[in-house]
Length: 245
Image (cartoon, rainbow, N blue to C red; front, side, top):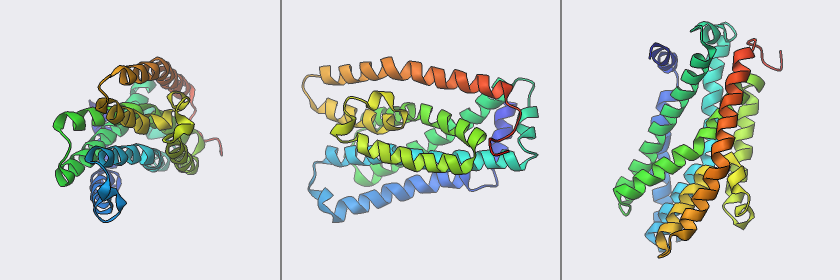
């Protein structure tokens, strides 16, 4: 808990907390405005919700890249990561706390985005909102792990650039191009999971939903565990230098 408090304190006077509150609200209001003045207004309510959630999942890597870059830049400017490495004797606790803070901020901002849209749009139930929130957050876990490692190891610029590339991949994966391969691409999980849920709940036979989620779990759980464990092992041996150094 002391390590977590320390991590939150580091972010207190930065734009990171504000970004996690303001950006979700702006996104929800902007999408609602677009849905009211464009051809989206002719769509079914659940189709509009599906598009909102899919786009939310698709832009996640960009936000993730920017946030993790800022968090890592704070550590780099504080004695070249020496504060992070000397916070506790257990490097695994230091790394896990950094990741947990990012994920808690992610959970908060996603909750704001979904809740705000539910308030202004008013067609989705609490159950739909809750399931969508869980799917977006669970789908984004591996993305945050990847970006934290990339930011620390390769630098902020690489993380931000990777975020834009991943968002492009996520947008392409929404089409038929991603139907058979999205399970293996972490940056597509959030958008495809919520899309699968919205489509599957419309069907009388939920076997499609069960099949897709089961297939994803078989693939995603091992990938996520490998990413997390590999990151911990790497961080345990890391000497505090970027590749560029």
